[in-house]
Image (cartoon, rainbow, N blue to C red; front, side, top):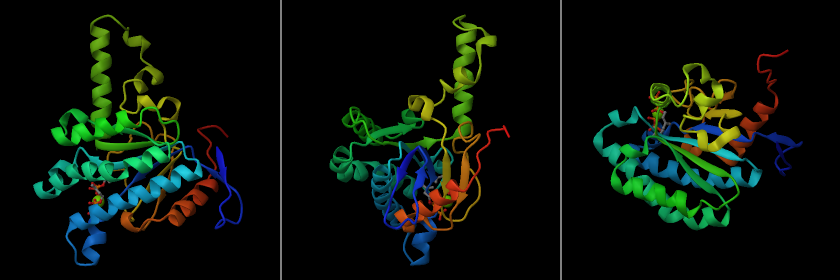
Length: 247
Ligand code: IPE
Ligand code: IPE
Ligand code: MG
């Protein structure tokens, strides 16, 4: 793990290699100041830029951000359309920084079901940053943990039926290879999960990958979540004793 020596820290901290964040509370952030929900999503997007930059400077290897769930389609169509347009705005304005910061973009989710324009910009962002060697900024966009697991099971069943594997070959490794996070290889499982906004649930995020992840539930609404909040949550992570079933 990388160590950070930040001026706002009293001692050196171990930085988790893979941090996952459920960016929640955009709607309530907007409502609090009498604005429409989409104003919260817009400010949430701006905050992705700030936190991605901060995490990259700290030496985080993978930052996974839950941006749109397979269940979020059930929101009002105007809100869904706004969320589908956000990647156009985000990559349209943030690409020079992503290049400068050497950040590689990954989108894990059911991208086939995205509107054409959204699909085009996310694939272009992945292509434009594919040679970057720094932090991986992984957007879970149209992502759902159950659908991911069902999809993996389906792929393995097909391989078993066509004879390329035997059912007994299926183990953790073969299963994980079929998950949407497989491009992350050995870094697929988050070390730390942060959920903002005070809700304490997983909401169908990374169900398989979170098996031994440390979780922190932060009360801050996502648009207000700062680098200092991130450092506080990493401090909580540093106090945890990860045993992975051993003693
Ligand atoms: C998180 O904020 C962003 C998405 C789910 C897309 P919300 O939109 O869920 O905000 P709240 O939870 O209603 O405040
Ligand atoms: C989880 O937040 C999804 C994202 C942050 C993208 P939700 O706001 O959709 O989750 P619930 O409905 O409160 O469980
Ligand atoms: Mg929410």
